[in-house]
Amino acid sequence: MAFLDNSGDIILDAVLTEVGRKRLTSGTGLSIIKYALGDDEINYSQYDKNHPSGSAYYDLEILQTPVFEASTQINANINYGLLTFTRNDILYMPMWKQNQIVNGSKFASTHQGIYYVAVNEETAQALRDFQFSTSLEKVIAAGSTSENAITYELGLDTTELPKTQANKVAYINQTGINDNRFTISANGLFISAVMGFAGNAPVYKNNLTTNKLSKFPTPKNLVVYANGIPSRNKRNYVNFNQIRKSAVQIYVPNDASTSTSLHSVMAGPSSALFMFNIAVQSTLATVSGGQVDKRYVDYGKTAQNATQTFGASDASGYTYDFIDTAVDITARTTGATISVPIRILRRRT
Image 1 (tube, rainbow, N blue to C red):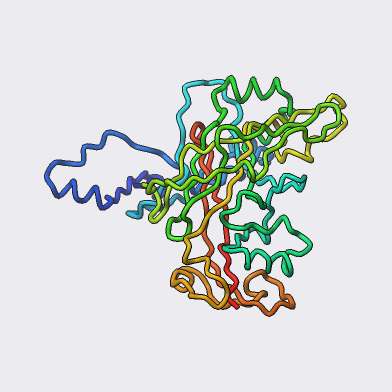
Image 2 (image 1 turned 90 degrees about the vertical axis):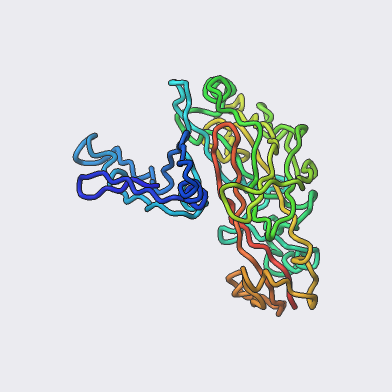
């Protein structure tokens, strides 16, 4: 359901889902005992503390944002629900940011904002030889626990809190917003398993004297999570639960003039480094000249040249089939969620 602002009058627009309609027609009633609130349509960056008319107008743009109409689609209402915390001293909430820093730990980087995942070694080698020959960190091999992997950092992205251990303890650990377990949601039509950390991943840590990384995880620390549970929120999606993190201990060095930005993408202290890869359904991973899975036809694009696939030509003459999808990462304690864009890529000819 949705609240609609109709010229000063508040209207409650309620649309029943398929389950709701069944219960209503059964004669037993809806028996609503729980509800959830969401603000997916709100862009909080529109909060303007510099509004010329004063503080009463800081949130004007937000309040005037149209809200979504009610929909019966299971994944079209609340993807990012509001949370309730009993504490009143939580001043900052963690957020996700890509960590694409090239530091020997094989953190993958995006191409035009998308992670390109090669379904087989033949496709991965084509990327190394041509499109990404000078940017090998962009090459991701599906199912690999040794090559580049997608990496995100979760933390407090504010310059008001320096990256110190004391700030991490005070604003993350002691306030109960330190996430330890995570869920990856992926489209089961294309993705058969995910690779993520188990409970023994090395910490992500810098030396406080030299500021060099003293410990860090790599894709070799990933394990396979193959037993997914069908998602209740998104059709065809599967949830892989209880994935762990690499604890972040990136702090301001003893020489405070030395930057820590070479390792952490957060302005403030971080709570987690999260790394993953995906495995694709086997019929999507046939070599060039092999059978083309119908899902490339139904959900993606086939026989695309380099310009159509990568946005730039090359001398290979290869063509590709690909499917664009998204993988969602959700922190189990704070509910912080990020949707990661992925292009599943197969060399066709």
